[in-house]
Length: 175
Image 1 (spheres, rainbow, N blue to C red):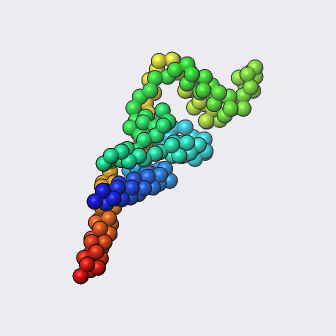
Image 2 (tube, rainbow, N blue to C red):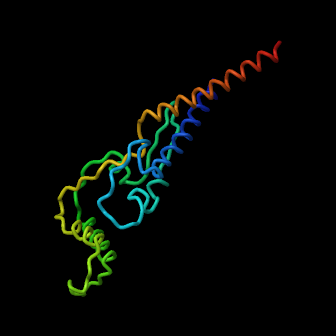
Image 3 (cartoon, rainbow, N blue to C red):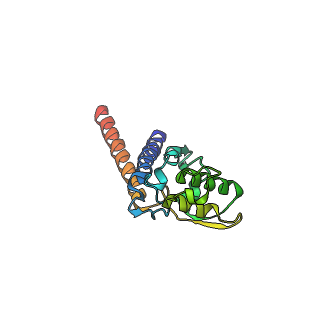
């Protein structure tokens, strides 16, 4: 029976990890599409630019439960949504992205720099005051959903059938 529970947990973990990974391809939490990003730069989905968040997802079996998490500090704010406070480090990053997007080099005059829409967006972010609050839209990729319950039930059903077949086979061999 101990192997029976381990098999169910292993199958559920594997199947859910596959589905949570597919959420990045779907750009949705199963059937709930993510809100579009305000930054427009034709570099793909906000959640897939580098793939680091997707690759960071881990599932761990602990006793009789499965824990899904990410080691990245920004994973929870994307998964749950919320507000973050602008820091000096963030402003420095926004300015760097502005210079990269605009092709600007320090020392160029403003009229020499033609701003793309992306550069203008980075500049607007960089001009925010330290301590200002930024709203991060929820783009859930891990959590509870009716399809999660279905995946769990399917794994249980498959393992119950295998256990039933095994027990019937054992009874036939004893006759």
